Length: 224
Image 1 (cartoon, rainbow, N blue to C red):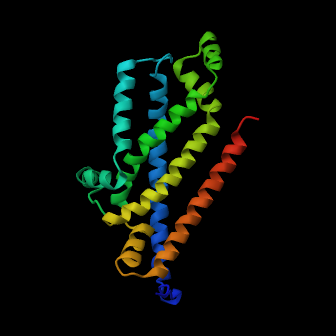
Image 2: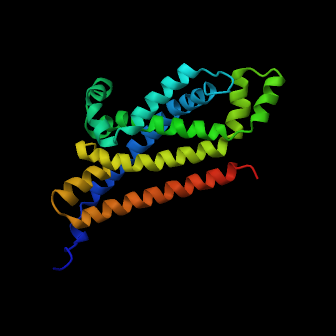
Image 3: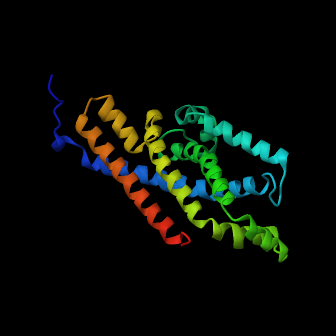
């Protein structure tokens, strides 16, 4: 049995370009909204945790429960469960627009937990010193926690963005558009190995570039 024939001259390169643009659009918007919502949520999670400045066991337990539930649901199933909510938000559950809400909802708890872990790495003595000098809660967050954990927050954002690349590919299962959708329609349903290989290669390159960019930013802002 020989290897399947691959004829790259038959690849719809314009379609590949459009699919890549769709994937980048989904990735850009979902990363933006994930950070905008996940960062404050992660900070709140840290502040209300045990022995912190806003310690609240009931609130921390509630937030942890919701985050753990959302993180435990496989993304493909979560997309299907969220179809009614997605239609309510963007009036469609397919295409680029229909993919962004489930991507954001899946990534927020993941990033929020990474934010909490990063903030736990901040020296407790620095926080206590700020409190002793009369700093408000907001000043502690803005002038102590965020600067001290900047490298960890960037590392968490990088991990989340790379994870979102795989999520955008899975969104193609329900017609989410982008490279994942193209890989399924051509590579799986039509057995077009060339298109499958091209889409997978672009996804790998995207992950490598994002990780390299994230690593450079983390190195730049890491405290020596």
